[in-house]
Length: 293
Image 1: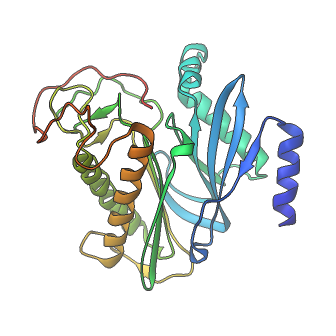
Image 2 (image 1 turned 135 degrees about the vertical axis):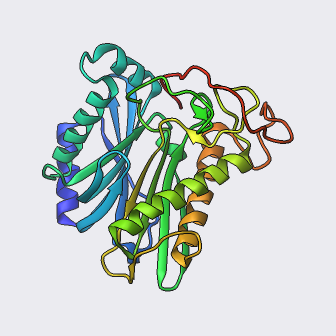
């Protein structure tokens, strides 16, 4: 508690425009604390979901691969800030901004190099969705942000026109008490992705690039899977397993809620959804846009 208070005092002293927000409920068994840090960057908002652990946790990030970290972050920034970054940063654009953000957060949280891993988005962190599913002895909590109005696509149909992409637009963080093997974490990415796609289908989210085609996600999605330290060991997280079921159901619920909050999508389709009664499978590729929110 003293350490947390010290960090808050330092944050207020060094960055007076920053505020900390709590109220994110994570089961005690997951041994994690979630906080949102809100900052102002030249008049534009930044909001970082920071999930901290009392000891290093093994996790798999679709951005950085396998890491052992003390904190996992989903960083959101005003879409106008991402546009400004892309225009003004001569080197790596948005990726350069992410690196600077990661370094700043490590300083604020008093973490060393490699102790923090980050994914980023333009979806508003106020639209964060949290879903927990349990079946003894397993617990799974998913924290997700999602935006799909301008960057949704159908994998296997739409064209990819960028070598490097902008920050992810459906960001999913999966926490569990189970001690996952590296293979189980990798398999959890598949299970989580299938659940995300099921959410897109039930929400009838259309491709932003091919008219009348059902989207499977966006072209810039990110995911983190965080292993537990005290629960039972798990080597398989596919849909036939109980923990795979929990991962799928928690991801599905979180993505549905996040897309509803951010974009107004509801199961059965938005009122103005061009997909109509039934999604159409197929089509040809289109041109990719740079940023989604």
